[in-house]
Amino acid sequence: MKKQTKIIVAFIAVIFLLAVVFVYKLHWFGAGMKPQLAAATSNPDSAVQAAADTQKVILQAKNSDAKPIADVEFPQQGNTVEDFVTEPYQIAMDAKGLLDNDNLEDVVLVLQNKTDSTDLRPTLVLFKQPAGGYRLYAASWQAIGAEYINGDYQQYDSEDIKIDEQRNLIISTFGSGPVGNRETRYRFIDNELVFTYMETYNVGAGQQTRVEYDILNRKITTEDINTMKENMPSELSYGTMRKHKPYLFKEIDPMTVFTE
Image (cartoon, rainbow, N blue to C red; front, top):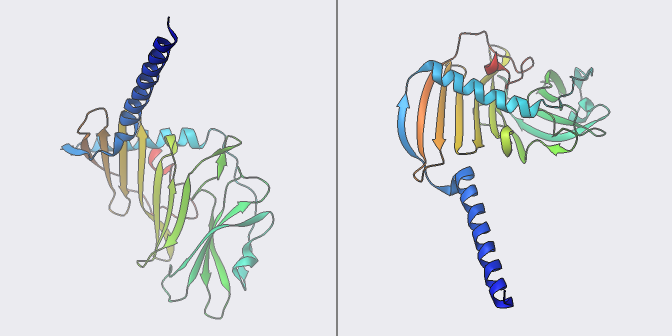
């Protein structure tokens, strides 16, 4: 075969390979197309089951090398935020705002073990006191999870915590693969910080799934988007959560609530 012919064949092979990769990404990520709403169903069993299945997939990825909760006690009182940061921890993220029912600026800290990036990260809620200083309201070991799992795999691409103007504590994580995106919200109700809302978004081969959990109103909305079709049709389903006592920030892992 002549050299010129070999070059042409190689060029065609490269073009074909690039086309295959492009088509794969088109189906996986949706290629930025706007989905069209195709149908809606009110089948509660379908919505609840789809939501539970989504959480199981996330949990399998998240807990494949899970560590136990550390036996650590944090100070109950402190003059400054730094007084609550005991060894071997450092502050990874923080948020300030009005969280409980007074007008004193509270603080939420996410701590990271300085010697172990796969360790669970405690989230501390500190209430500002009228006489000065802070009181530890609660510490959650499950609100955000470890930074790294399976030794060296970073669980999330980006993270954020904030307290909004409606006094909601909002924790957002964004990740590729099974972990996906997640937003959880908590609000101070009847003297307790209560889990009120969660939204998850996950992408898989040929499908995108978004689930909204309106915990206060016991409603679940699931949207499945078919990325295998050019117009990316979506289907909505609705379900009702079973009645349950309030889920408290200091007690629960948001991801396990919907797989019980």
